[in-house]
Image (tube, rainbow, N blue to C red; front, side):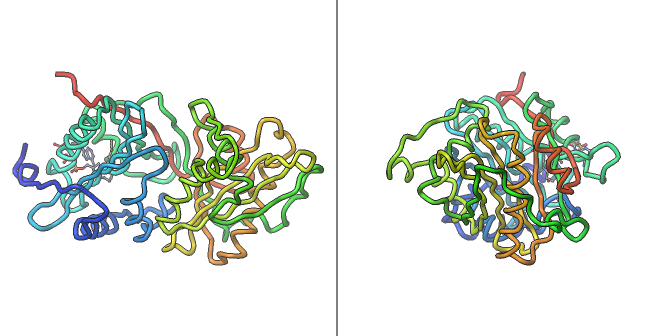
Length: 343
Ligand code: ACO
């Protein structure tokens, strides 16, 4: 280990330790690279909220690396309940301090923390340039490879952006709603009547078999969407939704979700769009997305740049996004490394 790495002091990143959270926030914000259409600028409310509020069914572990009194690196792991993996959500060295072994020391801490939580595999998404696309830093992939991580068969896909100043897919209005359906808007908090349906539809896209939550006030209170909203609100995010209701049955046939941070008036994240299998083939996906874009713009007139991400195997959604004017900007690739390295 070189001198710099040997002198590091690691402090847990915990929501009630305000000086450490502040130092981490400064480091994260000041280290952000100004790469157009790569990531929205950091929002302080979103970042500080993210330390206290984990996504549903996960917990967080993090550390800040100090050199003297200065925060020079940070590490954050997301620990999904009951899974053998630790997801590396952040592994960052301050730009001026790179190539001195700090990243390697953080990676070792990641392994130790993951082991303490009973995990056997570290996984991470690493951003890479698209062939012929905008330039992206090749450092992170080189770093991961140098530390023995390998590309895994986990999800790979594309980050896409839509610049409304260049192309406004809603300029011609929202397409007609297919016969037999009506649209329903809601904001950050899902109406009780849809909380179970939204939770079940959302989970139907995951790798594990969809859960069912039953019915009634307790089921609504503990539903996935209610727990997700707690995190969103805790991070100061506002969300906008449009759902399609099947008029004959009153069922929620599908919905789309977009959200934004407090600090970025121009940026929107296009989140999940899902249409239940029984209701596919009517063009509901595009109707939902365009109707929700109109919804967002009524409340957030400064929104101009919309980001979204799709796994490669979700060809229908990538095609729909391209039809709306989204442009692929970079790839994300899954990497993995065993928590206990081979000796
Ligand atoms: N180009 C090529 N190789 C690199 C680079 C680079 N830019 N950066 C690191 N490496 C490789 C080298 O082999 C290096 O050893 P060397 O300096 O003796 O040649 C080795 O990785 C170890 O480098 P460290 O000094 O320990 O790492 P550093 O403190 O520079 O941090 C990091 C690397 C974390 C990728 C930093 O550039 C960074 O913060 N980038 C932005 C955040 C990021 O993308 N993190 C994702 C990391 S990937 C992951 O989490 C699995």
